[in-house]
Length: 70
Image (cartoon, rainbow, N blue to C red; front, side, top):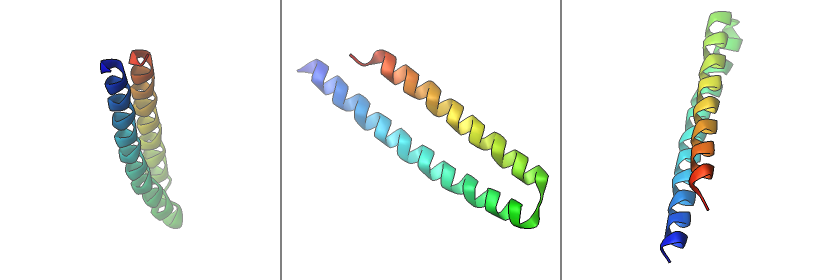
C-alpha cells in the first residue's frame, strides 16, 4: 500500500511541476513575441536562454523522479 501511495505522490508532484513549467513557458513565449515584434535580438536571445534553463531544470527533475519511482 505504501508503494502505491508513493507512486501516486510522485505522479501528482510531476503534474504540479509540469503545470509550473507550462506557466513559465507561456510567459517566455509572450516575451519572445514582444521581442520579435520589435526585432530586439538581445531580448530574443535572453528569452531563448530562459527556455533552455526551464527545459534543463524540467529534465533534471524528471530524471530524478523517474529514478526514484519503482
